[in-house]
Every structure is written in C-alpha cells, then in structure tokens.
Image (tube, rainbow over all chains, first blue to last red; front, side, top):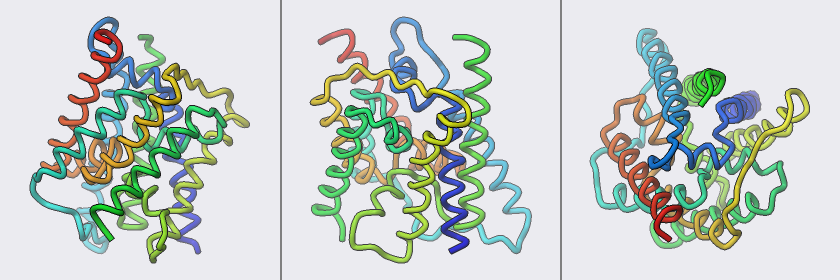
Length: 134
Length: 138
C-alpha cells in the first residue's frame, strides 16, 4: 500500500515537472520538432536537465552498495522492432506534438482532442499486445 | 524564446529526473510512461497496482496545478482525425520500440543504453521529418 502511495506521489511529481517545463503544450513540442523557421530548443533543455538529474541519482545509488540498482528485463541490442517502432512513434509524435506522459497529464483538461488521442493510444497498445505479446 | 522559458524548461527537467530517480530508488522500475500506461490493460499482474497509482498521480497533477498555481496552456490545432491516427501510431510504435520520450529519451539515455540512444535519434528524426512535411509540404 505504501509503495502504491509513493508511486502516486511520484506520478504527481512527474506531472508537475512536465507542466512546469511546458511539455504539456503540444505547440511547444512542435516548435522544437520544427527545425525550419523559429526553432525552440526548450524540449532539448528539458531532456538534458532531466537525464543529468537522473544520471546523478543513479550515480549516488551505485555508490551505496545496499541499494540494488540493476533492472532485470532491460533488453539488449538493437533490432528491427526497436527501429521500426521508434520510427512509427516519431511519426505519431510529429503529427500531434503529444507523447504518452503529456497526454495523460492533459486528460483532466477534458479537451476532446486529448481524449481522442488517449483512446487511440490505448487502441495502439491493444493492437501491439494482440499481435506481438501475451 | 525568453529567459523564463529556459529556466522553466530546466527546472521542469530537474523535477522529471527527480521523479524518475525516486521511482528507480523506491520501485526499481524505469519511469517509461508508455510501458506504465499500457500495463494498465488487462490481465493485471503484480506490477499493475503501482502503475495505476502512478498514472492517477500523473492525471491528478494537472488538476492540482490548476487549483494551486494557475492555467495550463494546451494549444492544439490538429483535426481530431489526425490526432486519432497520431495516438494510434504513438501507442503501437512506443510498445514495438520498447519505449517513448520518457523511457528511451530520458531514462535510457541516462543509463547510456545504446538501444535508447538509437531509439531517441530515430523518433526525433521521423518526428522532425513528419512536422516538416505536415507543415511545409502538404
């Protein structure tokens, strides 16, 4: 139970990060992806500061031997699924300016556009499960 | 682009990294949103509980922000049909590719995973080309 509560709080924190970084605004994301015209590097700054922070935390975790850092089940090697899947994901992201995190954070806005996107995203998950796994 | 935008981008990034780091510390799980969200589909397993709570936290964050801080801008002018196609591609593609912007782009690169670095380069490239074609060619 306490673990679930912590997960809820971390979801809240993650969402606040996306909102403060303005990544919940699709036009801001598209302004990064559109390299012609007036380019907005915000998304790169968000990613860089997020991964530097995370890398620092991981380094601290490695330094304390009582904390286990290995994540089992992380795949190795570059295969066709990785390349094709990422390419497809990028096309969808470019069409909308929305990826899964900002979509879920945007749900409470009640905007039909966000609801349609989330619904379609879950259909995409189901199609994947149907044809590839489980 | 203003200085404030740079500052809020950097601050938001730190918070995202902190949340991902704490999830790794407390749950030994990577904060990949596509994986967490798709894990809510049936049948449920031992991982589903914390995933549901994490997603509920994500959803609640915007409501809490609106109450405590203020409005959240969501500017979106794509037609609903385009968004439906986009959502489908994002859902299917992120699962096939094993991650999205958070799982590969932040968590994977922070681990220096070659898979994630390649995945991020690929989806950045196809997203950029898509935006270019959609906005400037069509």
